[in-house]
Image 1 (cartoon, protein in one colour):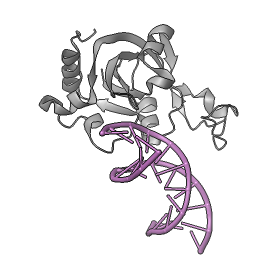
Image 2: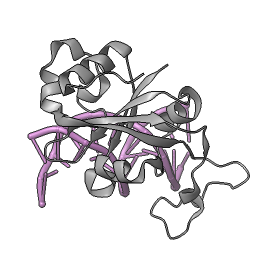
Image 3: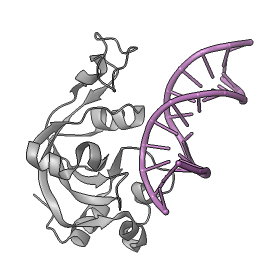
Image 4: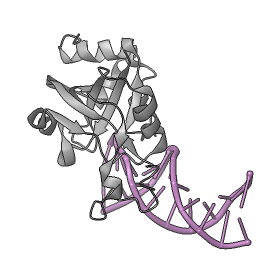
Length: 156
DNA sequence: GCCAACGTTGGC
DNA sequence: GCCAACGTTGGC
């Protein structure tokens, strides 16, 4: 079991949207490192911290679970999508995604400020300046700490 | 809205 | 393969 942190802008797709949708293809990832994590490293059942970026304030707002194997991101071939990638070959799709399913919403957000202030979370990627990656691995220790800060039990 | 950080593109 | 220009992310 691995742990992850996935970023999303609440104005675009927030934790409330995932809660409503229950399950969602994580489309629009156009960064190779993030894609590789999603395509190669994730396994069905892995847990992820759902993080609101570009929010006031930014922070961890809930948990999601990897719900599918990797498959081609359909938006790369959709000319009307802002994620359209004309250079991606349908026979060898450049961008892969997985579905995520809603697990729970934190009773209260754990803000980036709180994450940064917590000694036990030292080294966590999202707290580091200049980390723009939208998908980052999280250690089991850090994952449990964020859950305890949020006041939730680590799901089975 | 600003701007630092940093990934990508493309000319050479 | 270098690197300048450019675009994007995301905190502030």
